Length: 98
Image (tube, rainbow, N blue to C red; front, top):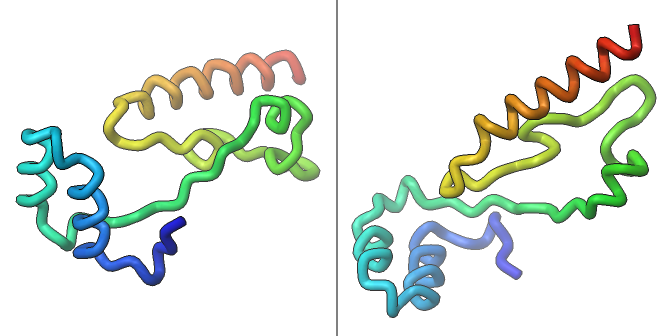
């Protein structure tokens, strides 16, 4: 697994290019991307049962929600929709609690 601290943007570009060499359009995009725009972010898998049981999600009166809970990669276009869904569920829960 790559370590973000030791992986340079140039190395990241080389890794991506080696993985997508058959997708010509993608290769062109990666080759022409400014190195200052290339970064690596760690993602963490949270199993559904861990969320249901509250492990790593809440402690005392604090609950993790939104992007901190469900990080999205920018290529899938789901961040705004997920934020609206989270807001609806949060408002319903708060309404039931009062």
